[in-house]
Length: 267
Image (cartoon, rainbow, N blue to C red):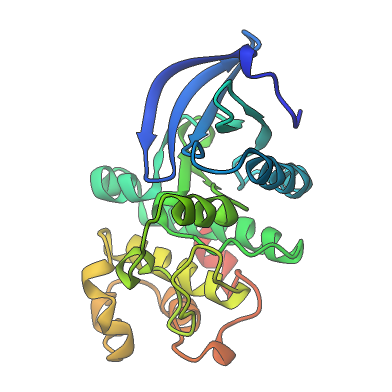
């Protein structure tokens, strides 16, 4: 599926809302249990919204073969020409919610395995020449039906986010992009690079090691005080974390796997 029939979408409970969309659990064609994002595109020119939807369709149909990505189903427009994006429905919660509410419910090897699987999904994106640009723990869904399998969401949505902000006259600050690498100075969702994705991945690793939101402690990276905040994790994990959060982008690893030790994760 790619271009969907809006009349076949039967909305259910609301899952959440951001400045860019409202998200619902739904049924499609009375058969598929899905999730759909209703983007706040009412101020956008119709042709522009349709052009962006066409780009999303053509990009995301290339990414339907990786278990660590939320699977794309299609797009459609309602009678008000608002764009809707339909994806698989993931039974679980975001990684940020998991860290806040259920962090102690699983063992450290299970947590490390979540990070390893997440690295596989990010590497798949990079190998296929995709840059996520907006990776953070709230953009990761944990699938409880598949033993805490992490799934990266919101791939290729940077353009629609920036366009909605432009037409809704939203001004962003650096606080809105705390997960952006230091070398990324643009205050937009579209600014980014593969190495910047890896920096964001490092922040997620750090959150998983600490068991809490790292935003209040981001200054420790520049101050070189990262080690003191993660004393109780394995040296292999620390080495991977140091590599991902390197302030100098030329020192960042080329792949999201960042020399993670598989035998440690599995054992």
